[in-house]
Each structure stands twice: as C-alpha cells, then as structure tokens.
Image (cartoon, rainbow, N blue to C red; front, side, top):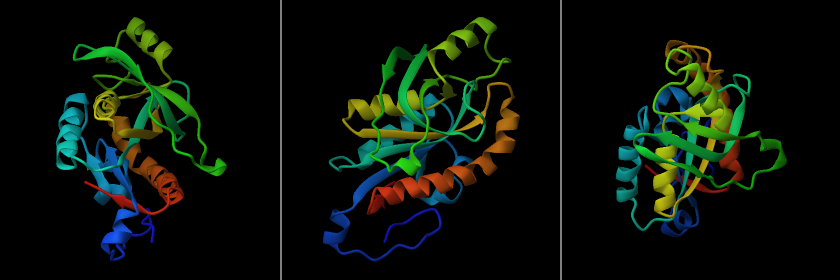
Amino acid sequence: MIMNCHSQTHTPQTGNESSSKRKVALFAAVPEEVGTWADRVNFTGIGRENATKTILSFINRHKGEDYIIINMGTVGSHVFPVGTILSIDEVVSHGSFFNDFKMRPSQLPLPEKLKVPHATLFSSDSFVDPSVYTPEKLAAMKAAAQCFDMESSALISIADAEGIKYVSFKIVSDNLDVPFSVWQERVTSLAVQLDEFMGKVLEALGEVEYIK
C-alpha cells in the first residue's frame, strides 16, 4: 500500500516486497513547510550551511543505497502568484561560500494532471526582500531566476557530486515584497496545499519507501 499525506499506516513488508520499492528521501527546511509529511521528511534547518551538514550526514548513513532526493518547501517569487506550485528545472547559485553555477534537477515522469509550471531557482544566503538587498542586487537576482530559497544550491550540488537523483517541488509563499515574519504567518496554510500535491506525486511513483 502506498503511503500518502492522508495515511500514516505502515504495511508489514517481507524482504522481497521492500526491495521492490522505490526509495525516496524527502528534504525540506522546516516542519512548518510540509504539514502531515513531517514524520517522513529530513529537515535541514534554514540556510545553505545547515543544508550542507544535513545532506552530508544523510548520505553517510545511506552509503550504497539507491534512492532519489525530493526537495519540497517554500520559495519567494516575483513572477508567480502566492500559492503556485513549481517544478524546479534549474538552480542558480551565487555567494561567498559557493562558486557561481547552474545545475539542473531531474524531472519525474508525472501524469498530465500533475504538471505544474517550471522555474529557475536562485539559492540565496538570506531571505529575499527589499530590506535585505540593494535595488541593484535585487534586480540582478530577479533577472537570473523566477524564484528564491536558501538551501537548494547546497542540496543539489552535493547530490550531484554523489550521483544521486535530485528533484524539487516548491510552493510560492511571497512575492519578495514582505518580511520574514509574513512568511511565518503564511507557511502553515500553504503546507496544506503542498501536502495534497506531494501526496499525488508520490502516489504516481508507485510503491515508495521513505528513508531518513
């Protein structure tokens, strides 16, 4: 039986049944972003340094295993309305701790009803709003991508270096026009919408085993 966001039931498995399942490692920054998925998600904390530590520890625990990483959570966007779910098809990184690069996440073969807009994500060192960045820097960032978060470049760069398939779905929480406190107010309600979508995505993959 497939576990989705409406079920916490674990069906007993024999060794042969377990080996036939696709192993999935869910990653997100904080529990507020994922609602009912929380018990199956590896949480990084906010920021690229936290994300780096978390994924390296995870990879060390699961050496030799075949699995895919699915990163879920929230992003800011100056292009898409709040509540839009996005499939990330490119990650752009700039910053003092990472070399500039562009990387392309994998895409899942999903049915047409689950297709969502694709976007380039800019991975930043801080929450993106006008109080943090100068108008010139903000304009340059907006020209490079359609959405923003603070963990993706760390996750995808390490997954790529280790040869691990990486997929990312994000929901827009703000339009780069509000402070972090507003994100905190919105994130729980947005998690309900993301929960429902991710349940359908994971169901489409077939038999899944979540690993932490």
